[in-house]
Every structure is written in C-alpha cells, then in structure tokens.
Image 1 (cartoon, helix red, strand yellow):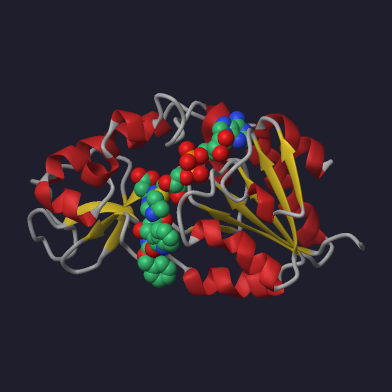
Image 2: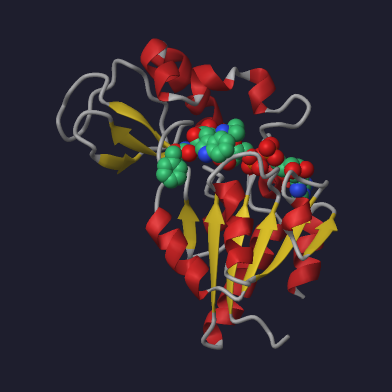
Length: 232
Ligand SMILES: CC(C)NC(=O)[C@H](Cc1c[nH]c2ccccc12)NC(=O)[C@H](CCCC/N=C(/NCCC(=O)O)S[C@H]1O[C@H](COP(=O)(O)OP(=O)(O)OC[C@H]2O[C@@H](n3cnc4c(N)ncnc43)[C@H](O)[C@@H]2O)[C@@H](O)[C@H]1O)NC(=O)OCc1ccccc1
C-alpha cells in the first residue's frame, strides 16, 4: 500500500497517561474517584453544580503541572511532515486536556470539549478561562449568575464538531486509534465508520480495547514508546 496521505487519529486518555493525567476506567481512575453520573451529566450539574465545578477545577488545576509526552510530540511531527508533502493529519481527541496543542499539533478536534473553556448555559457564550469556577460566578456576556459551566460534552449531550469529523473521515486513507478503551460512543463507532469506508485501521494501545477485533492491526504497548516507533 502506498504511503498514507490523509491520516485521522483518534486519541483517548491513554495518550496522556504518561504525562501524569489519570485515565477514566483504570484502577483508581477518575470514574472510581468520582461517580460519573454526578460529575459528567447535565442532570448531575443541575443537582449539584458545586460538586461539578470542584471536579473540573481539580482537573484544570492539574493541567498546569503536566506537559506533553513523546507520543504527543511524535504526532505533531507527523502532522508537519504530511502537511509539507500535500497530505494531512487530523487528531480527533476525546481528551479535554490541551497536550496535543502543547506538543505542537495544529489540526485538533476536541469532540468532548476542553478544560480551559467555559460555556454560558443561558446565552451560549464561550470564553477561555484557566481559573477555578463556582456556581456564584456570572456570565461575562449576559451577566447572569450561575451561567458559566465547563465547556465539556457530558453523557447524553451531543459531541462537538461531528460534521467536521464526518468530513475528515471521508478524506482519510488511514485511521489510527491511540490510548482509548473504545467504551464511549460515538467515538468508539469511528473504527466501524472507517471499515465502512474501506479505510485501513490501526490500534496503538496499552492493552486490548473493546474495539480491538475491529482493527486491521493492533500493536500493544505504552503510547510514549509505540507511537514514536510507528511514526519513525
Ligand atoms: C458509557 C457508554 C456506553 N455511553 C455512551 O457511549 C453514551 C451513550 C451512548 C450513545 N451512543 C451509544 C451507543 C451504544 C451505547 C451507549 C451509547 N454516549 C454519550 O452520551 C455521548 C457523549 C459521550 C461523551 C461523554 N464525555 C466524556 N468526556 C468528557 C467529560 C470529562 O472528560 O470529564 S467521555 C470520557 O470517557 C471516555 C473515556 O474513554 P478513554 O479516553 O478511552 O479512557 P479509558 O480510561 O476508558 O481508557 C484508557 C485506555 O488507554 C489505555 N492506556 C492506558 N495507559 C496507556 C498508555 N500509557 N499508553 C497507551 N494506552 C494506554 C488503556 O488500556 C485503556 O484502553 C472518553 O470519551 C472521555 O472523553 N453523547 C451522545 O451519544 O449524544 C447523542 C448523539 C450521538 C451522536 C450523534 C448525535 C447524538
């Protein structure tokens, strides 16, 4: 097969694990520390906004003390290389951290939102913020108290940029999944979407995922080791 020109990468929490960010489903992972239905659903936010603000304040603060790892840097290099020869690399990430961008990536789709963005639940205004938030805060646009919420896609909510995701999948000739358990949809359905479009598929993950059997090839190992090796 000739060298792929238009690569789509899907990443999950596993690519940021070696940077010191907890994954969700691992032993002692985020969903063991916090009940997902209370901190990552619109119903949980309505019931106890203070708990949800605290959960995302903790993760936003933690972001200040982590940095990208070899896997993030390798993908940014590959993106540059492909762009320079008329190809493209698009990173679709489920992660709400900004380590892909800190690693130099430019073409990143945050389908589940980002930690450093706030959204007004009343007027829909969005703005960047690296500070703690609380239910007493007001929206910087409509000034309404309790307007600001984390600009994060919670369970039951529509993921972001589904049209752009559909477009890059229509152009792709290789789909690579890195550091994800394949447990959450529609992200976990992208490998089947790739197969439907006869796109070659590769999984790079620490252990077998719920979607491993769907990939043409699966390589197991730590992202910080196997991603630079794959890129080289
Ligand atoms: C639990 C699951 C069954 N439920 C869902 O999927 C639901 C419902 C649903 C929809 N369709 C379905 C179909 C079937 C069944 C259920 C559904 N989906 C939704 O609600 C979605 C919204 C889901 C988004 C929820 N928000 C998140 N995050 C933001 C919050 C926050 O971050 O706080 S999900 C969150 O969990 C998921 C976690 O998964 P991973 O990132 O994979 O992390 P995990 O810990 O599980 O795994 C880590 C992996 O890394 C590996 N690893 C570890 N270390 C390393 C290492 N060092 N190197 C390499 N790999 C490593 C491990 O081996 C492991 O495999 C990520 O998506 C992450 O973003 N919305 C929606 O469907 O809207 C309607 C719709 C859809 C389409 C079109 C129109 C309308």
